[in-house]
Image (cartoon, rainbow, N blue to C red; front, side):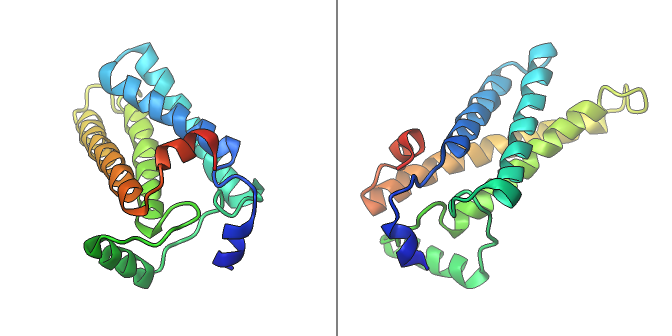
Length: 172
């Protein structure tokens, strides 16, 4: 089946995937530097809406195999790690096993960031420190994940001899 996917002429990354990716990336970047206030909340909730749209697309609507979700097998993750250590990575149409796992983690962190941000402003938790503290820890985790994501894109691009950033711009 993987060989058949590589022969198709459709985009690796459909337009909705690319738009949500870059919109969430931009929103997260802006939120890192705008740490509070209306725009921080507005952008945070917009990012969650985009993540939920992307999840709905991947679960129910998309016809593209690279937009659909899969749960990487432990054996595939181990194989990918061995390839990384060896310095030669197999080509994947879409995310490799670790990349797919990272997507899920980042989406969960974004969702929980919105939840803890919202909780910190509710009457029930107003003045409580823990929602703000958890929100801050999640923010640091997301920052680390973004840095790891960027490093992985550079390393995998180099090892595969493909520009993965360009692929996320034009879709091929």
